[in-house]
Amino acid sequence: MPNGSLSLPARLCLLAWDPARPGAGDTARVHHLVRAGALTELAQRGLLVDAEGIATPVDLDSRTADAVLDGVLDLVRESMPHRWRTWVRLHARVTFDAVREQLVADGYLRARKKRVLGVFPSVEHVLARTAAAQVLREETRYAIEGPVPAGELSERDAAVAALAAAAELRTLGPVVRGARRERRIAELTGRSGAAAPGLRKIVGEVWGAVSAETARTVASTGG
Image (cartoon, rainbow, N blue to C red; front, side, top):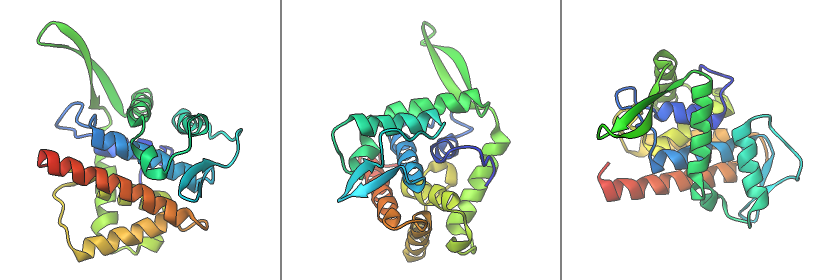
């Protein structure tokens, strides 16, 4: 996939941004998706592990040099213990806002001032690097629907595809549900957690949380 320097949560945030709808990435579903990406990357890096279902930092000192990922690590360290699914939701907006600002600083999004009702100052965020976002969408759709075996994808690319599929992002087009899609997502989820013992369980838990949140959103809003 393009933009290899972007973290997993940054890729997912960029992927969710609809070029036709300013600010369209700013929804609770996307907040949960971005947090899920951060948890998955921290687990893939070996900085968060599973302890009987609890998301647990390996130590008190490790850093990633990424402000967003380090922020999530600090939050987990400083809070009472929680299960993975809780961390997908808890204070997820904080992680989303931090990732969005990273994307603005890196030139992927542009902050544009506006006035609500012609009076109240506000800011909306629009895609600045539309071509990069389009390539990312195409690559992700291909990973979800294409013929390439999941084992030939990188763990990060597989995680992007699996989590984006769980969130049913509108930017990826209509969702065609069925046994084939379910098998493919299971393969992608397994590939995302292939690196270390216990990681597959973690990724599965995080994926399940995003999927459950998406189902609730769809049921309550109709889309």
